[in-house]
Structure formats: C-alpha cells, structure tokens
Length: 101
Image (cartoon, rainbow, N blue to C red; front, top):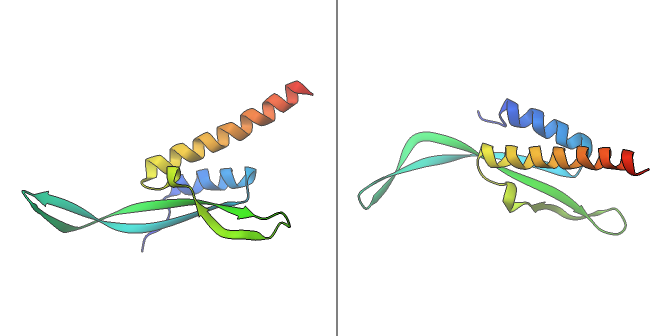
C-alpha cells in the first residue's frame, strides 16, 4: 500500500488552509533501468504525484473537475517546491496587505 508521504501531506494541509481548490493524487511508477539497448523493469517503485487546481465557472459550480498543474506534477521534490512557493506567496500577500491599508 502506498500513499502520500508525511512531509508532502503536512505541506498540502497547510496549502489547503490558503486555497481550498487544491487536489493531490499519488501513484506508483515502476523504475526502469537500461542495459545497452535494452530497457527492463525492476521490482522497485517510485511514488509520483499530480497536483490539481479545481476550476469554477461564473456561478461557482465546478467547471472542470480538475485542471492539472503540469509544473507541479512528478516527483516529491517538484511538488514540495510548488507547495512551498504557494504558501510563501500567500503569506507574502497577507503581509503586504497589512502594510498597504
């Protein structure tokens, strides 16, 4: 059984507090190795992630069930970098609003 790793899960929960339209999906992908011209599958697997934003129409209903953010899909490092940037962007906006008003 596989699932979202604990570090990614904690970051995702924090990002959800800023934007409720985020969705995440994890899946196992077999690791392939090469020997000369042949490519063979090993018994090892790597967990890959897809990060989605749900999009809404003008009435507030779900327009697309989910729109994939390709910049945040792939291995754990890419998804964590996107989530850190997402969280930092929201906290920066909140701080700047405090000083503007």
